[in-house]
Length: 124
Image (cartoon, rainbow, N blue to C red; front, side):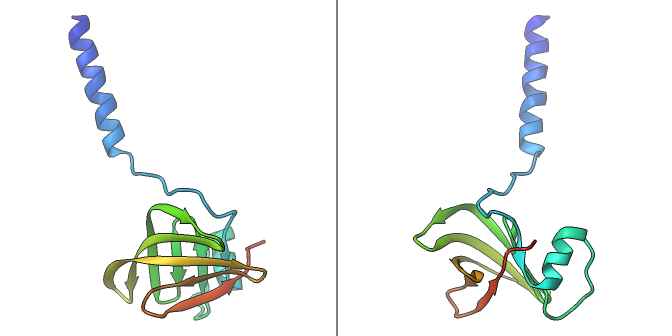
């Protein structure tokens, strides 16, 4: 009887660990972005403005794209690199490496194709 209980309990714990989504690694010291992006980070409300930029541990969001960070970030001398998969206007792109570079003005996010977004100051 105890063996059956232990087996059932083990199965429940295993199922719960599989069902729980992996939490994004925490590597930034808060959210960064444009005024609109920071307002969204704080309130969850968006005005739909074209100048929307928001960078956080989960990814980078603009008015026309969303990039989800995947895996663990790698520390560099000036910031981080991390795998990202972006959806641009409904089209899912390939997984690529995003480079997050920190300066006195905030973070700039660069992609291998030449796209650069920022600098984005820290949200207050």
